[in-house]
Image (cartoon, rainbow, N blue to C red; front, side, top):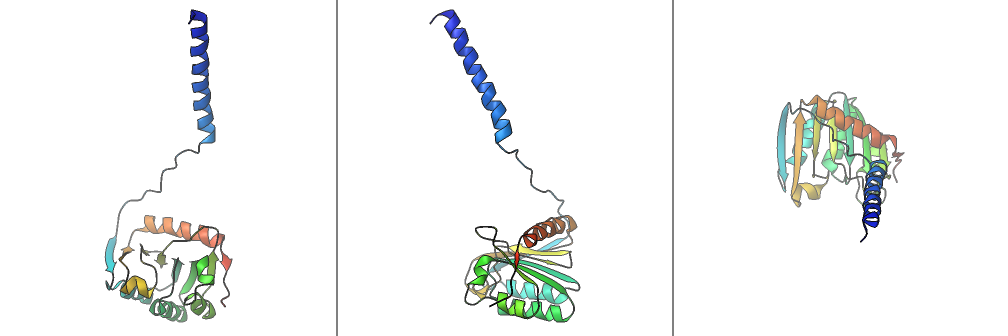
Length: 190
């Protein structure tokens, strides 16, 4: 290979690399760091089957004083639905955001809570709205793999965390709840 051809080849290869790096900076989205928070407060952990997770959820619902925000993929637990309705009767503000599967699921508590007057919404902007959370009085967070169902309590291997006193973490979940609630549709029930 002649010296001039080699220089042209190297120059072309270098230009291609520089062009590739430049384009990748504009085309590829930047890596976004996840929200960070300091671990504070207390955490209770429950496992199923038969780990008293439903009982723990109901205990927290029964102690709520002002607000309960719920996001759920599957919600068929009658005891949890009844506890939410009792909280509503005590004057607790409640909002529920559910996955679109709740529109068609045969045994859903979505109808039960919607007909009881709890504002209920369907998040159909995702393949699956798979969140399983409750935020109580903007100070207690319930989350984990545990669906609000009888099967989750009695048959499945699930986990549930009840996190109290971690305002930074709760605020992140409230922001996420508000984002999903903002693009959800009102559910009137069947």
